[in-house]
Length: 204
Image (cartoon, rainbow, N blue to C red):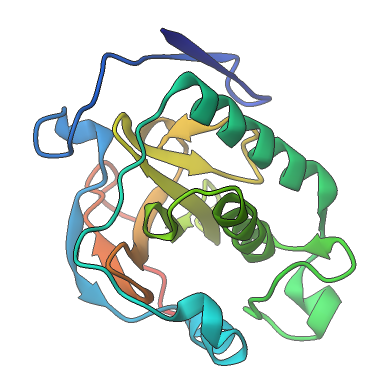
């Protein structure tokens, strides 16, 4: 079956699903290359202190979602619903400080609030938590940005509030720095994204 993705920055992206594929047997470009363990962003550490239930647990067998047509359509729908429901407002405007991670407040938030809400809604819809990973990147202006990586048998898919389409990670305009470990939501792992050679890392 063939899935199509529509967005403002990318006209059409088609993905052909041909059965179950594991990261070890699929093309390496479909999946982010992970590096060693690294520190969690300051904002996520603060979030975990305030929302301990969201950061508990661990697994030795993290899930990879089989991307059926129904799952794909659900992913697109939830991404669009959250993007449309939340108004983009900076942490400075909302909380008077930078890098304050929380769930949306009064229907507003910045990129981290979009990501946290998408993760929460997908978990409530039955998606496995270990396949829904908060991910930090540098955007086209070299500014810090957060997206949600969804680990599927067709590769790592990105849910974003800047690019409205759901796209494979390598089709997005970002340099990826680190993301939640699929083994434990409070731990983070570096990403070896060598597609761009001169982008500074996210320090917090």
